[in-house]
Length: 256
Image 1: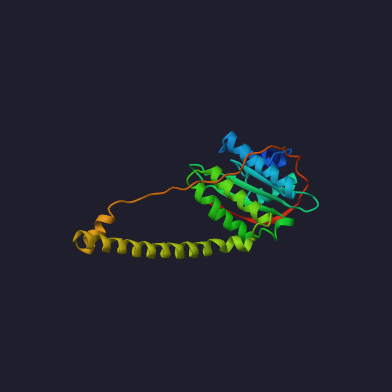
Image 2: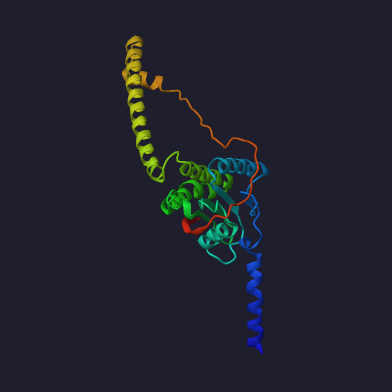
């Protein structure tokens, strides 16, 4: 009798869990779905309008979704199953992309995954998706900056898919950027030293003091500068709905 009751409990529980999972529900025709409530209304709208414009110009659909529960699935299976069942991307090109974020909770770890439709697997390889997560998303997520991380990942994904640069360019650009920045820094430092040394020598000769005394006086003050953070531009438009794209398991994820 106990075995029968246990068997019936399992049979009843399994479909109940399945019904509660996001990808078993009727698709919500929206490219930004924040079930974890980590985005403000303004942030959602900014992301949404950028993705709608991208869909309109390239036919590539990028779904950004945050959740609090993976329904017992690992992050990879959950994300590409969501993309497959909801049909993200067009049925002709299978050019859908799903960026999933499960924020970190006190008793668990945060999860992120980028799933690529069949048609994007060559454009955005798994290694590149992994790099986007590790470089663009997780550093922000560790500081609870969910909008910044999602924004950065979506921006890079759109630039690669649109052909502004290739996945290979993305994987190597930071290395060359670091070399260039270092070279510029060294050049500016040398120029600064030579310029300061000339001024210190002239100041020392004019005022009858040693070179190092003049150097110390000329370097008594310091300057400072700041930077700015770019963002998506606002705009209008509406989303026409998912197009029936297919997913085969391509993508990559990470945790923090």
